[in-house]
Length: 168
Image: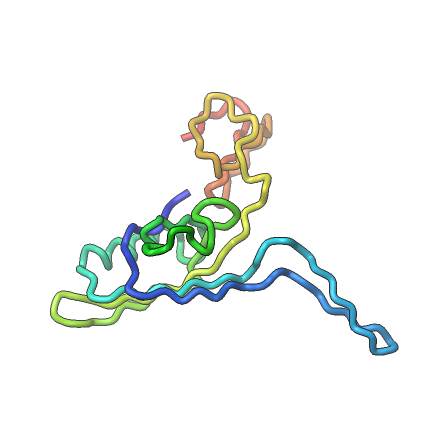
């Protein structure tokens, strides 16, 4: 799985999200709440980068294109949380990130640009580990299933082993 470019943001805004829950009202008007999970959902991170070079801007643009816009998940690097002893959202534990919107690039001073990026969390399933990996060199966040004669092609970075096929 890809990682966001190692560029220290000028500012960060983290919206911590909430735990999934549902409120139900009975016919008598009594409201009861049900928690549907124990991990936060809909966490949003807005990153602002000031006075970037063209090379740094191109790193962000290339990363966005490499993630097929907001389709592919990715992890953040420690430079995203520069200044934190412990990041408020673990780097590669329960959450990956996707782009909420395309990066916004504005001219700053000559040969420098400002970039705003908005990301949101994607909870990783506990099952997104390596199963029946065999001799694969896949990373720990890839999903490898032995599907015998299946010929499915993965839509994301998850790897589905179709039996005797050779994974790249």
